[in-house]
Image 1 (cartoon, rainbow, N blue to C red):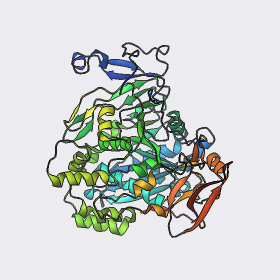
Image 2: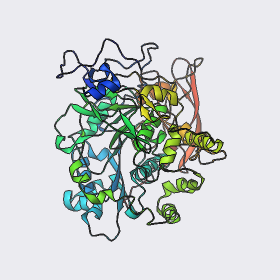
Image 3: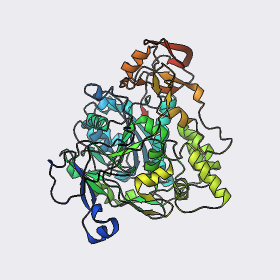
Image 4: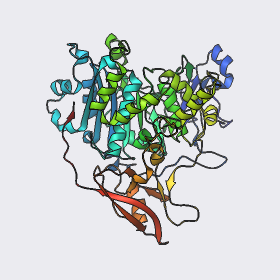
Length: 564
């Protein structure tokens, strides 16, 4: 993407006067980097004031502002997603997450806990039980905030597979209005982290406010987080992901840095699995692919690119709020044993276990028999890494890309090439994109609000369209969700009651926190507890506005402790 020619990379110490928005490292000033990227591809580049497209004047979509300031910023639910593999640090992470939150009771934690049955190692002790014993004897105050799903570590298929289960849990609680842990709203936040983390004080609210500093509903805050020794130190030098290399597939490489950012920096779609903070409509639209068995390299690059094609933008955080215990985790040999027992259980046994205990994974496993290529090969097919000419391979590529875990419709793979600087087919980084970038425009999904209509737009964030896709993308695949089963929930995100409300258009705008250009509402699937009602929403100076199905859910269920 073009940048302002008047802004050139500079060396030396940070000078706030000529870099009021901070700066970004392109590459260290070394002969090999000068040879590869040229003289303008080394040093620090001052960050520009705007990422808006100068030709069209288009900027990122920023509609939902209900929680842009305190006290509302302290109330929106945060769904924390943790994949833990034989990690003795998991209980401490639970403690840190609740202890350092400004409002810990709005933090809901889902954990995929992979341990070895019968082991007496501390690494295989139960995360929740140790949290209660060692960190919080009054842990019952959070027992309805935590859902632990226990798995036999010998059947582990890697971190990507574990994280795909977390995505499935979010989708299940969205579709069933919280039958597993708690209901998930489109405007709730989903936060993916590792199981060995710490957090700055009030990190929950500060991340919400940081997300708003992007002025982008589709922002994804992500990076390789700093070391735990920097926790709670208000560090303003933040790791920046913008380079890749290729092993058997795409892999993040050569992490750079940003200094003294005034707001999060738009990156070239490079995403890190150790921290991802985004609205939950992003988790629903771009779930982790459950068919990437034993994938390590390839998870991050493929999901970052999928985010981009679905209209999401990855940003480097402007300050350090989440940190990672690299020394104590990576120095423990037990945590590196995943995949050592790949034949410890048959595929059928694993499938049967999922059918019995993991209801939100059942349809995924039933569809697995239709998936021809899994693992790294699937990543390469999705992204077009390498060349394929056989008709059957080209057909499979089409199926993967059109599935729920495929490529989005908002930006093309050619735009990926231009924006990221990565030539996927030739497997190489061809341009340094670590500096200033311009936002790539697209048309977002809405209901109503056409050019010849006086009705307001209702922003759906594309979730009904994504969930309507089949899991495998093949002709005749009936695993998508019928879009006609959705209704508009106008009660606002974060309330947790899942009720739909009758409202005029002006109420929709105010209640949803829109900037006035449309209505914000949760678009949710029905279930057997809903009673559908057809309703014409009237309001505003122009009369009848939009026809849509809304429903109200009956009663509020009592929650039980969610551990197994």
